[in-house]
Length: 328
Image (cartoon, rainbow, N blue to C red; front, side):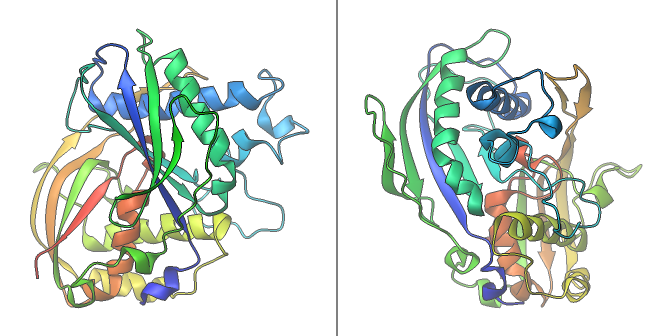
């Protein structure tokens, strides 16, 4: 595996600085789901000409920003990916403080946003939607917030361009594409031991059920298979097309890596769908695991990309957020 093999997917990273009107007392994992749900509702209210009409039956669905970003569909004639009913949402919103169950009004907040590939064409709609979210408020108590500034970020998470500032009518559509090779860190090409921190609940399907002895971290093989599925799907539908790699070879390499230690707990989180009223589990494991193996160096490109786009189920809710630390 090489870094260039993931060049078919460009990522765009933004920091959105917010100020709350009053304290936001919502548990962090519930808050992550609320960000995403409110985002979809706000975007649809901005662009939809008939909200009683299902998107599948809408004559304007093809050019609609809501469909392209929040309800993407597999285009006619495109290959269907196994286990994938619809393309993944081409964006990720990361909660400003996943470690805090309450956000005081005085706290400086920075909502993270990563946009994948061609979805960057909808950047203006995305930013206007977040501003509208602020006007409508979050949660049952409708806590409002103001967007103070939006900046594009580089591979190190440093601000490189101002996109918008409060009080301005001008949006500067700065697009700094990040490829896998831009995310490479010193030592990645020699890595054989890493610690992966599961910052928000991470659910990789082969590991969704905890053993009787309690939760444990996903195996490296399971983790990389889900990384392969997510990154590959984003590249196929929003990048330059299917990535050029052998998925079986990748899985074989990943299975050679062993788990040295696991320190995780299970987070049981539910979300309520505003559309259907039903509740859905969106939990997973949080904590960290240490993995070791000679194959890690060849698989580091995938780990660096999922640091931005997340891994496993419900990544657009902010789940599956990971950080990778080189140990050897």
